[in-house]
Image (tube, rainbow, N blue to C red; front, side, top):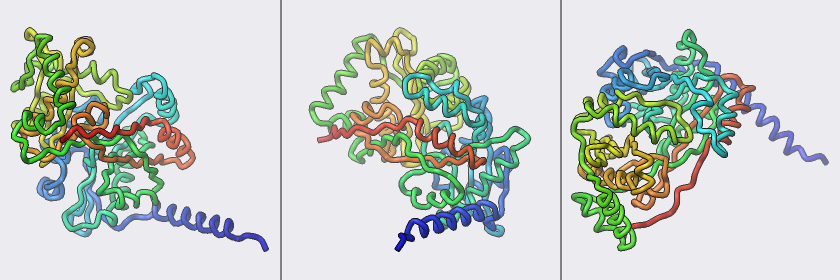
Length: 403
C-alpha cells in the first residue's frame, strides 16, 4: 500500500500557502494614520503609546533624526487604531543602500553580492542608528500577537504610500528581542523570514556599585589587574580621560574620529553627519554623556552614553586608529562607558552587537536579537535568502570576570 504521508504533507503545505496568500491580501480591520514626520501625528496619542517604551521612540529623539539624520534616510510613521482607540505606534525608515556600503573583505564579499541583487530602497521598521525594538510600541494591556498583523499592514501601506519616491522592495522589521519573539512569529504568514543577528551585549549593573571603582572591586584579581593595566597604559601615553560637556565646538573632530571607526565597519547602511551628536546632546541634556581620551589638547577618542529608562546605551564611539595601535584607546573608552552608565543611575548597560570579546571581558552577556525580512516580489525571495546567509553572525564568547 503506498505511503500517503508525503501527499498529506504536500496538501497541508498547499493549504498553508493559500491561507498565507489570503492573509497578505486582505485588510486586518484596523485603521491607520500615516505620516512623513512625527510632528504630523497626534502628539498626545503618540506619547501615550510610546510612554514606558524606549527613548528611541520618543518624539524628542525622532526629531533629531528628522533634523540631523543620515542623508540617505527618511523617517516614516504609522499609528494603528481599533475604532477610535490608538493601539500601536510604528516608526520606520526608508533608506537607500548599495553594495558600496559593505566592506568587501573575505566573507563580506558575499553580502555585497547579495545586496547587488535587490533593489536599493529598503523600508526598515525600527532604527538603523540604534539597536533594539525601536520600531513598534503597543498600547498597555494589548496583546502584541494580535497586533503584529496590523504592523505588517502598516508597513505595506507605508511602502505603497511612498511609491512616488521610488519602490522599496525589501522590508525589514529590526531587532526583535526575546520577550517579543513569540508574538513576532505572526509575521511569517506575511512572507517575512527571520534572521538571527549578532547579540546585544548587556552588562547588568549592581545597585551596590556607586561608581567605577566599585565595579572594579567586584572583578576577580585577573580581570581587575587587566583593567588597571589598560588605565596605566593610556595614562603612560600622556592621555587624560574626561567628560566633554560641550560637544558643539568639537563636532568636526568627533565626526572625524567616528568616521575612522565607521569606515572599518563591515556593514554601513547609514552614516551619521557631523551635526547628529551635537543636536542629540542638546535634546537629551543630562541624559547623555560624552567621554573623551585627550592628549596635548587633541582628541584621540570619544564615546557617548545615553540613558534610555533604566538602561544605559553605550552609543556611538570613535577613535584614532593609529593611536589605538600603540595603546588601548578603545578599551579605555569601553571602561569609561561602564562608569558613565553607573553615574547615570541605570540598572543595565547595553553595549551593542560589535566587538563581542572585549565586551564579554567587561562582564556583558549576550541578549539574542533577530530581524524579519521580506521582499515584495515572491520570486526575488531567493535573493533575500542569499542576503540572510551572507549577513555575518558571530557567537559571543563566554566570560565571567566577577568574583
